[in-house]
Length: 297
Ligand code: SAM
Image (cartoon, rainbow, N blue to C red; front, side, top):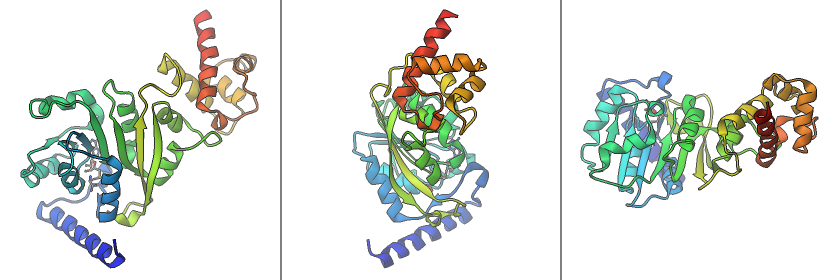
């Protein structure tokens, strides 16, 4: 797209966004992470990454003023849009009334099981395979990822706008791993589609964003039968960041240093290493030793 045309389209979207807010007597609620997308090119990147067909159901989190919802509805078979803000949800029911394949649900997405969201649409569109697409409010990024990746009914893919640093953290490799990267990479493959500058939103947030795509695996990347004890172990490993793993494990698990050393030796992991350097496979080996000991106690 030419620079001039792109600029004009962004101006147009900004004017429309401001106009919609004014005519509905609304203001962007920062507490709900309301930063509306005003860039056509970014909209196109999100839509392309989602790879939609008329056979798809899209679950959109936080449709806001509906700029993304319209594009989704014209490509997918059905769009279920979950908006927490009562006033926005009411407004969307009016402004999107001409789209017969959109269901607006006025709920907190984190308080709703993904499978339950399909109840209202099942007579019109029976598919229960779905793709998540969202310009997410930043403050719910990690809970949303866990909510969907650990759900009984998992999405086929997630294309979400997140804070740029968070996208980098999620896609990190051993050396820069964290609790967040492990909890996403256990369930799926994350890739950054594009960086998105703050000026692509109204009002502009203080930080830059990135479009992140997560494609869930059919099975978790490593074989851990009990994710609760796995994350107890991983949390303990990261409980004292930048410390040697032997010390952070002892501290986080509330065990003696010799016990922590023995766990690490059982998994062939050098005690001087830091939690950030362990790969998923190494965490799985450590978990196997950990769970054997737990069962023995
Ligand atoms: N999709 C719109 C866009 O791209 O312009 C709006 C995106 S805005 C960053 C995030 C939206 O998520 C807001 O409309 C906000 O009200 C909504 N929201 C915030 N917390 C939510 C929650 N827990 N469940 C559902 N929607 C939520």
